[in-house]
Length: 176
Ligand code: GDP
Ligand code: MG
Image 1 (cartoon, rainbow, N blue to C red):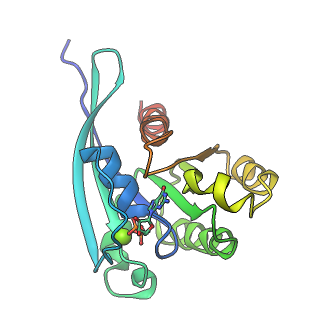
Image 2: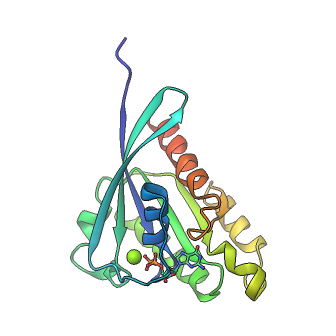
């Protein structure tokens, strides 16, 4: 009769300054700062989420510094991953290409198959700067990855909970 309590390792990956740390901070603490604080090495945060009425999953959120992809931390960072948010920046087109490299690197490093969600972050900037990336591209890319594409803003909070919650549900489905 005991309720199964899930505990998941969720990694947040993508090129530098796309908003990985900001998305985690918004999700966990509901805060945001425009002041850029470089992530050094690897950071963790934890949060419990109610992924379904009365059902809780514990998430450990792993955040990596932009330069760390090829360094010694790589192995322990990827080890035991249950799911990943892959982030690019809607205001910088080259981050979309780089994000794909992060994903293929993670797929090579992690033995088991794991669910991913593709995130275009900084949605709040689009009214100012216009559409830099043709949205069909991330949508098609996500389909190829058996995934979905979500646009978020760590600044306003738009779709942030939705992204983490959707990934949590995918991890639950994969592990039940
Ligand atoms: P990381 O290197 O991927 O961890 O990126 P950070 O979370 O440190 O964010 C990089 C910069 O982008 C910081 O100055 C943030 O304040 C800013 N930033 C992050 N998310 C957003 C967002 O959704 N909208 C806007 N306008 N700026 C953001
Ligand atoms: Mg960071």
